Image (cartoon, rainbow, N blue to C red; front, side, top):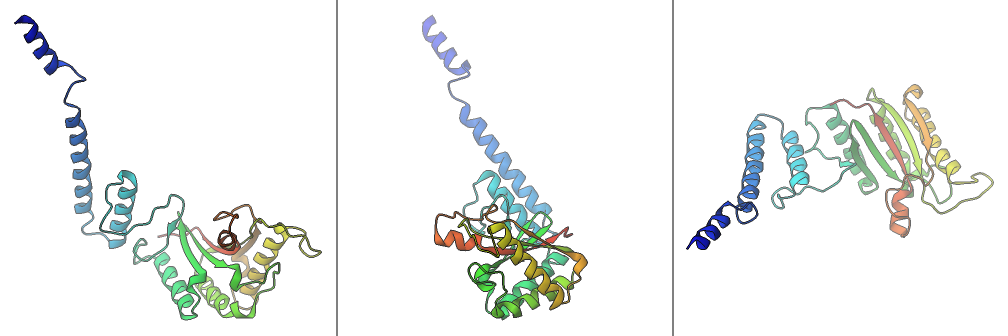
Length: 238
């Protein structure tokens, strides 16, 4: 009889038998409670800020698999009007650039992304240059003029960056991808100053060669994505 009592007592008092699910359940309930409290506190704020919070919460706990369609990403935040303050200058830049690209029918070749307070507009090399060349194609001039108009209307410093894939190049004009990427950035900069009226003191150019890829250079699609010119708006304020 005494042994049965001891066994029964050990089952109820032992730390490793039973009770663990209660801690997990309590933690889960607390997380949900915090989530709904934060949603209530955002009820009077802009829709964009609520969306940004839900995205961060989803990435943190990974339990909201339905409802809003939010893409993952740790470094770059895809630019869209619903994740930028609707009344901010940055949102205006987004809308203006996207509208101009769509009106020209080349929005598929223009990609906008935000990194902190930096807005990055990517232009695919296919619409700007021929292979192995830094001469701007005539067909890209309308787009670059529109981009220049946007840059000129903002107070931000802008850096023009040239990027290539990892396929080697060795010509008399361009001994390596360093020279090619730099020449492309400089030519876009000169166009923006000479043909689009952008103040020269707000622009700079840099060539990164193949050393900042966006995708693997092992496929044709990846190499095409890595060949690009980036127009970087620096020091943006919301």
